[in-house]
Length: 291
Image 1 (cartoon, rainbow, N blue to C red):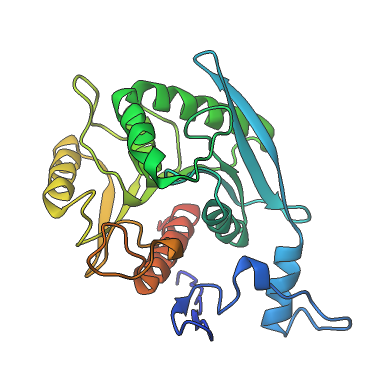
Image 2 (tube, rainbow, N blue to C red):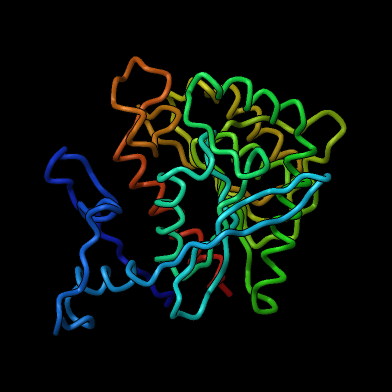
């Protein structure tokens, strides 16, 4: 019988919202007290894990451009897999590092990819339109950059270690395009993605299994767009699954988006927690395939 892991989700005492880290934001992660039994004290055990996570610069080149990402991993643990994490439009934001730390908790090393080059991480929302437009108009450059990132990561890892891609928002578009390019990956996950069908003339076949996590109220990738991507993947014979979260909008993973249901970007703590459970389950399945 296949083994399973139960991941608990707590409630933030200040906001009353579901928090996939049991109420601990990165700034509030505790440290194990002296003498704590890490084998029996879950809070102390988790704190001990987080205390050993390190983030270092990770550079790679593509199309004559320098890209500056971040390599995030535990300093004291054997790896079961690795991820290239393509974040939303803000690049290497605190949320991107939060997502990376979640993956590290699953036993993975993570590179947070550089969406724009030279480590640029915009903080002004007014810049997002032009930056994402540039990504959409130069989809092949995004694929080339991601390929260079994966290649550099693979050279740093033990031979044969599985590599996955996880993309949020615009990063999800790049991750799927990379899959369509024939990428050699163990899996591709996109969450609250800027979904698009394949570019004109591009292949629609993706060799790696794909997990798509989207909200039904997403105004950036509405249901009709999701349906077109699903139809394309079905016609191509791709191995994929789609998980939809009701009453959830674009950026459901981002607490900074706020919870105004009339806004374009809306945080959903329930969808955020469910998406992390789905990511963890997808990873376990790919690492322990059913015979």
